[in-house]
Image (cartoon, rainbow, N blue to C red; front, side, top):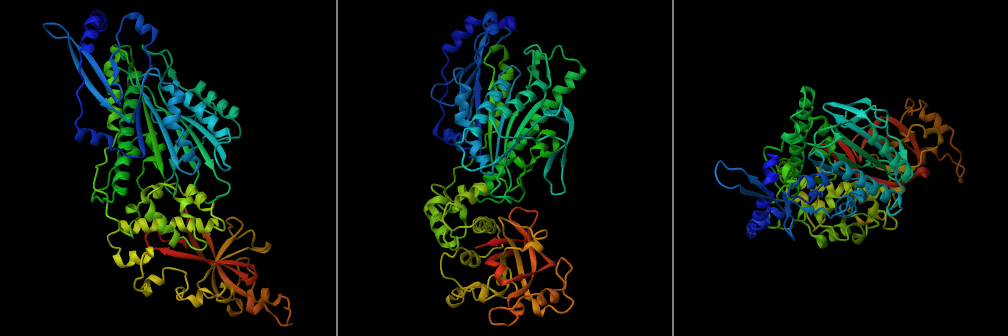
Length: 624
């Protein structure tokens, strides 16, 4: 077949020159351009190799000028007559020809993922394609650009950067930063996938990060093939984790740079033995599952934020492959993490490899999820997914607490759906730019917005309850049962009550932020220097047998209090028995330790904190 292509190269070039591409009508064009906003599928066509040109092979891949469409032309050998041209076209979100540099691809596609992950989201880049199509060259160049961006001081805030690089060969994982030591991909008791046994060193400068990347590249498994002397026969996953010291409760941001194993054309497999054939099957199987997972997550996200509810949820088979199991939190629709994904399909332009190139582009095109161009949903004050920027800003100003969060700093351009997609640490960071806003208030406001969105998706939520929750208009008072789900004062709507300092209206059930003294420092879980507790009763009313979590009798603690300025014992009046409130397993959630009791003096209390009980998750969340 190769000799046939070489012998008919001249006729092939003439047929290609005479080819007239079809034009997409407006309906087809709109359907292909309306794609998922969180996944970008691109293709990079490498230059022809010198050996391919020397053998006389023509170019089989042609980029349609001014578009993101690529035309593939095959030369068919008929039983009779002259060879004929068979053409096919593929559309991607962005297309890069042989003249495009890795720097250009980085600026367009991967660079936006870095601040996204830096802010607490998950950014993932996959490089896919036939062996010898330039995947490893592309990924290694992108890793160098990422290192530059992380260390050039352009990113706002301080982060602890950790890196881990593993290799997946079949169903087995190896740590490339620990001399290819075998590790395990396991799920912990909370359903989070862990790379058990993998090293994860911290990096503080560009040189050390690049050294780790080079070390891993040297240990990666490669095998000579007919097309490539150093063909990668495994998936390489470089994960960079960003921990925000100023937001200890926030989840870490993650950036994945993944060099997938190269697929092979049929002519590359003629010399394969049984082991290599098994290896090829495992690679193809994992790539097939990866495609299903990427499409499934994109479809699930598109349905969720379009306000659609399907009786049968989208099935995402991330447990069918070690590769997708490792990246479970990228694909799992139950995950609340904000994810953005970039796919770079590396394309070999040689006519001799047109079959493998067609498979690569077909694979890439199938990853594009078309989002129907539906009529914009009618504005509803109880549905954040229907808000434009102006409506969102108005809601922020009226519902963000005291002091009100600056709407122009939190949502300068975002609509309701876009703000919901924002990673929680980035949301909190923007809120903290408003003077006087605390981290607790910012976190509570984010929870309030997300809870409103979740409630709006539940058919059981009544319009009356939703309108009251948004504060969009005066409505009937909240029902007694709804009052019981919040720690707020039952008379909180009264101006007279709101004007009284919280220390003068302490009551059972109030949640307070306090500074634990030295005796409780080892027990109270502090967040930003503060701890939280629920007031149970005055300490003097706790009885003679009540003990705090240190085992000390409460009455003994009261007996040791000092006299106040009036010469009377103030311990009975300014001390309360409280239950500790500590962070729970879900991000932003809290648990009340009814048996973890402490004595808190009024002087140690700093502010009232509002919390709500969420029946679905069975945890408490801060609110404003």
